[in-house]
Length: 578
Ligand SMILES: [Zn+2]
Image (cartoon, rainbow, N blue to C red; front, side, top):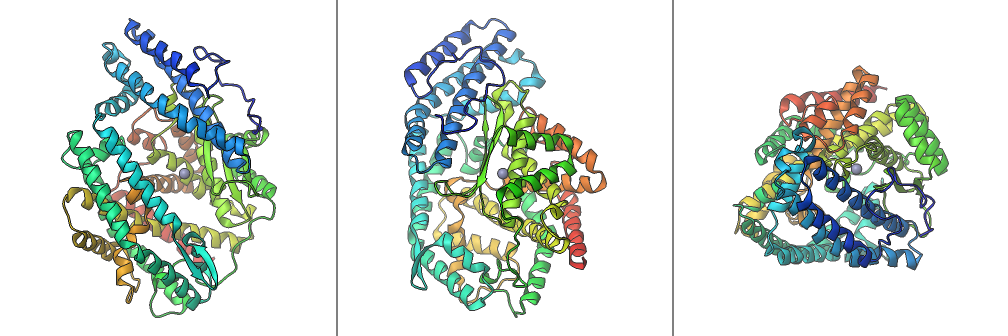
């Protein structure tokens, strides 16, 4: 594929095992490589042979990963090119499904290997526990259930994505309607919000039915794997070795105790600024002073050069990394026709370099996104010398520390984009967003704990459980007249349907990012030194060690959370006065 400017980037290490001529679109050329790896495992007679075998498997995994990434990148950068789409779909439909069971067999062979217990402990313990749990959880009878689960998830996505409303004579998707919640005109906001809420409520039986079936299938999957409930199974499946369901309950409690007073205070300020008696659900996204959106740049080149300046003021290594990405053309940031929506960071796993995709149009959100994705990119660059593919990626709870820290650290130098009053407004909005998201994360997480530890619950009981959480974490918003919408608000949270339990990761990571930021206020160079050291570890150490290398505590108690909330409030107070 010559669609990509970086298509000729060399592998970071020359290949030793995978032939350079192999065609990754042809399973016939790939399966002999898996055959050979399978044959070689029992022949490994020493720890070093087994390690060599792991590195060769690693090389194959990285090459396949890079191929898949390149095809995905080409497709999203050129949605108008049917060949790019075909090439990606070919990989997803014909190569991936063949690769997965073969990789699983290799994992099984590793777990069963007699020399496994003699592998250097510190080096392999994380890899070992991940591989072991992956193999142990597998049940052939769960394969059709997982297909069923995927189909139900797809049903949810299809239903959600298909909903539209007629608004002022035009058909709009619910996503498009989101924009009207930022309009200064309050009756217009209310009209837009009510239209969307009632459209969703029309489908409530379908959402409830899909979810009932998902809960049932998940319960069976857990049971087949020998677990009492799906929550305990999901914790294993998600590789949560370093925290327990009880830790998550402590997280919910700390959010209630530490974040809720700050959130209520923000809500009260918002109410006063808007000049309304009560905050209604449609009053939460609008700028409370009815100002025009911030305009940080006109051209994407300006966004890149100003972001480069921010990294220059933060840290020399990070600045060099970002410059290198520009030199190698690893950024595709401007919105243009023929590009998929959204933004992401992807890694070319063999060249061991990151790529960032965005649709920048000149909003503050774009500045937040480039800082965030650059944090992920720095993570990828920091692990380049790690030869074990599995360790070049970290658990999501730490990946997001890398990215969320960059947002907070980069915000210090927003004057690269704005005059000070506008920079302060952007900082304020960012910090308020952080305070406001924690209660929602706690709500979504606590709800799922309840769901999967109350098998056989009725829909009415489920609603009651949700409403209790809304009382705990919803703050002072007046929902009167919209009780049904409030009781079913969870229908719009995609994760509850399609990525069960995956959500608190963002809260855990934000706690880490806030600590990195707190450290940087005392000692910027020191905080960045620790940040970079932690990134270099990739996924080679357990979460508490990754956090501690970054200068943070992996802890969800009020002792850790309280001072962070206090710091954010203090900063908000300072920005108010500025
Ligand atoms: Zn991210």
